[in-house]
Image 1 (cartoon, rainbow, N blue to C red):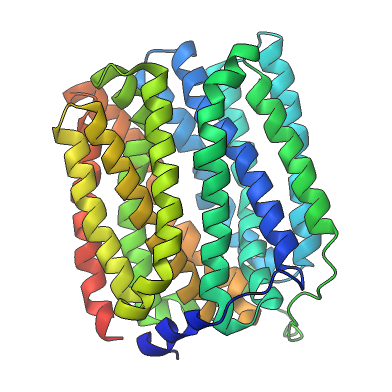
Image 2: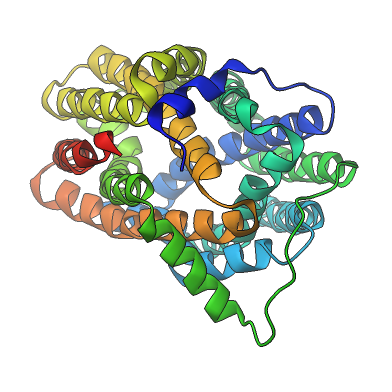
Length: 407
């Protein structure tokens, strides 16, 4: 088992752009650009179709529900199949879905029901894609470079999504309500082509035991996750955080445009600030991991994010929310990079798809509940209350992490 000291020292090696990592990075960045256009435009479309916070929150909740239904299955499949082929095939299907949705929006057939169906379908496909991508990365870069490889992947995605995509949404919407979704469809197709061009061999897998089933293999992934103390604590903490994040993001557009009366421009500014902060976080993750270790870095990130959420929910000023979103994004990047790298370092490669699926499924389990709770809280007590609820949940997550510091 890797220690915190060895985990921190593992960030010293820099991943090379050749050997497949450069293409994977480009595919991830292109795909995130399109996804961010959709993610920023979809809440605005939902808010234009209904003023009911519960219905707006339901769109977000259904975007996470497939992780509860299919997340474990997606991880077991990812450990069985050619991960590169699974990734590009999934992206082609997602691109076709987005093209069809863009056509529906252009023809005036958009509805809350259609938004819910789209969110559910895209996330169902994502359960396979994300687990396959997590399992494929260690085959493309050496283990000592995993920390920086994850940081470069996530930072590149945030630059594309936060700096480039989100500010473009208001401009693209002036050209037509369907334009952001057309761009997302194109990004899926480009990402699929890049992943399909990878020539690096995937990770070697031991022969499956006679009589092995998907259910049995899924159970192995759950046992591996729960048997590793630091990953178990991190999973519990991330689950609590995701309940809070679900409450926040489901109603963020209403928080900015309603409680702060900042309009679409204010919403775009808050999303852009989050992206900018995330980029800075990607640059700082290496140094923090060297000083504090991976788990110590995650603990610091959760504590700072707790303060950011409390500020958003209690101070009725746009600039406060923008600043809080920037710092929240910075620390979110620190959390995410170290979380993924810890999983890759402390899990046998042949089980990485299943273990990451178990982690994601358990962690995401609270997000639909959080989204619905956020909608209910906003309806009952005010549009600022989801941020305050999220702050309390992040505080509980920090407490759950403390015992793992000694592992």
